[in-house]
Image (cartoon, rainbow, N blue to C red; front, side):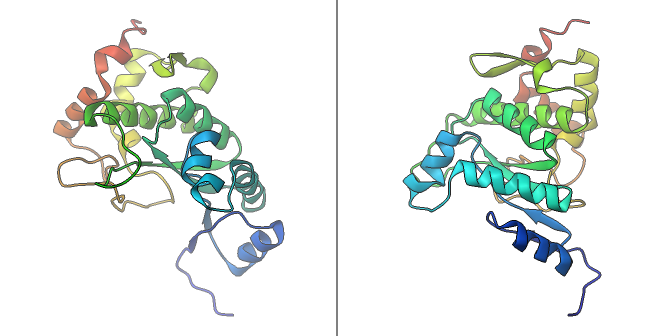
Length: 225
């Protein structure tokens, strides 16, 4: 069998350990098992048996964690904006990261005629930016889920100082495309007027827009030091 020098990334549904081992021996470098929903209830309604599929939350989580043990680290996709709270999304991101799973974020994009409808655009963007920022703090080892505070599911304290938060926001990396190494492709939810995942470092104007999306005074009010 010929092997390519180009890194191979593969997206699959949960497989047996034997199949994972086989893919690893074949030279697959990156494996992704999309979870998509952030809670068991949302998974069941959108991707599980209620949606007419054979999948379940438990089998997906088990398959993702088994793959991570075999490959060392795997990826998954989370679609933000399906009805989860900040707390739901950040708790799952923390659990996945602790199990060597890299959660890449997408934003749910409403298509006319679709059954799923999210709230107003600004509220949806605030939620997305909040989860992006929390994810970055977790994967960079700056904070843990237990350090954060939530009120009625909304993240109100990131658990780090205001100076650290500002530094991360202005650095821009938290809002760039997450996923496979060196991936900078625009996600399917990007438009000419609204960028959720930047393919490069956001410029100064875009950083200011990100601060507005986040509601900067809101997220800094608990951290006055």
